[in-house]
Length: 387
Ligand code: NZQ
Ligand code: ZN
Image (cartoon, rainbow, N blue to C red):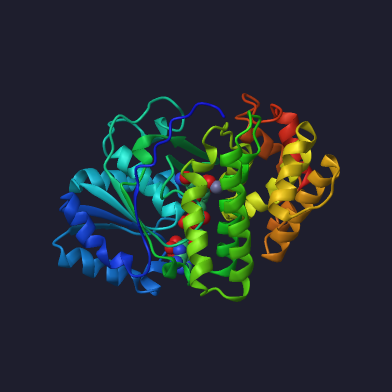
């Protein structure tokens, strides 16, 4: 096990009806004026917006609204939110939505305490020294942003994230019932993303980490089962609850303790949904994860064989064969939950792979990866292999 520092300060309020406490919770922290960020309107359709506003008003919290965060959120929106947060002197940001609303809120929170351009943070020109606190009401189990230290935003054709403890939510309200209305497609995208956060940490070159491995394998098995259940029963509370808690556990670094955390497939995917914002992050991962795995498994077949045996109950004794069976099982599952497996399913041109490889490697300036350093050529090969 490698040395590690573990920090997961977010207070989680988990369960039915928890969103009604939001005003009370914010009042306890002593905030009197907040910015409420939300997405394209799902919270109004479901009635969540009204419940949140009632709770905030009853507790005397003044609200500055910033609705309209798009999936794969954009810097232009964030800049408007920062300006408003500064003008209105809000004391915290409340994100009500999924990973996109959360990430927009996180960037806003850091930007509100920074005099320069908030894009400096992902470009590594500056690091946040202060930020407004962020709290959230999570409405979709997917990105894990509710407990993660990262925030991801797109600008022009670049999708970039950065990590900071200022990105940790002070509290996260997680009511699985709020996710009943998430479409089957977005539910599946979420399941893939949760799996990807767990698998990215699982597949890294490290000394033995038995406990962390078992935690990761359990999360994967549970979330796969939840995904299967939710195909036919989108209102199965236990499955929704499993997915929601797994979302947090998959990306709060619990499954990274004692291991390396190199999220290579995420780097590939961020190039994809940065260039094509109509592509959901989880759907991009469903295409790229098996392709990446096939490209690198032979560098550590025993690891991929362990994954196959522990997670997918593969009985094959030969490591190479078992590793490939595990990757096939992953693809079968993604197909079962109606996720794409090929880039062409997004109706993007075949020639795009060179551009995507260029974006991913920052114009051939960097390599990514765990088992091997993937350079421009490798990255392009992976994109080509899944067209
Ligand atoms: O915008 P609204 O109307 O709310 O609709 C959203 C959106 O269209 C809808 N939705 C959410 N909750 C719903 C609902 N529809 C009905 N009922 C509900 N209860 O779902 C759609 C997708 O929402 P989004 O927030 O984009 O999804 P997700 O949570 O998957 O977030 C994806 C974003 O998070 C980033 C991704 O790159 C992507 O930009 N990530 C952030 C991470 C982090 N900060 O730690 C880690 C991840 O790896 C990821 O990169
Ligand atoms: Zn992700």
